[in-house]
Amino acid sequence: MSDEQMARPPGPEDPEALRPPVRPLDSVDREILRILRADGRASIRSVAEQVHVSRANAYARINRMIDDRVIRGFSARVDQERAGHGTSAYITLKIVQDSWRSVRERLRELPGASHMALVGGDFDVLLLVHTADNRSLRDLVLTRIQAIPEVLSTRTLLVFEETDLDPEP
Image (cartoon, rainbow, N blue to C red; front, side):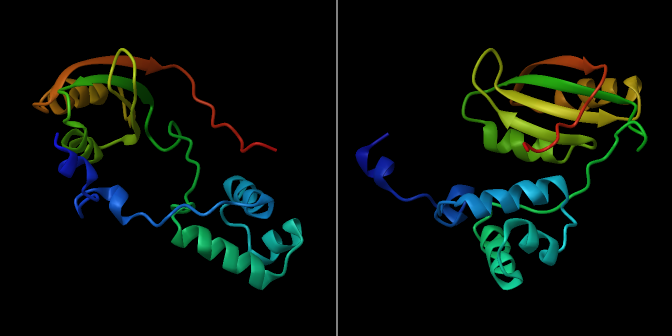
């Protein structure tokens, strides 16, 4: 790659180009994040009281962290088995070098995919999936994932039990 190509700022197709600059978080911001991780439905008033700031200050801080994409959204913690997903697995993938972006887009379309990461080590991608049963898992791996041209190999690690970790105290 030429020096000119390396020095060129990221283009619009690069998601990093759209991210705002990182602003440091202070202890109040970190405490707000801890509270919201434990209860995403906590009211502004409750958050403000717990961190000893005004409601306006708590509201402004939360909105700033949303704008800065520190807070990417609010969600519910789901018991996968009770939600009809009796089988969970981590799937490791080896992929063609420099194909992460296209593979990532294909994996996002998979039913039951809940987390993915580009990692270093013996494999390239770690994917967590939740399916109704083993037959659905087999179909997902053998017909959907292995059909992605850039996927060189997969390994499936069946999850016997899951536990969501509570936010740090």
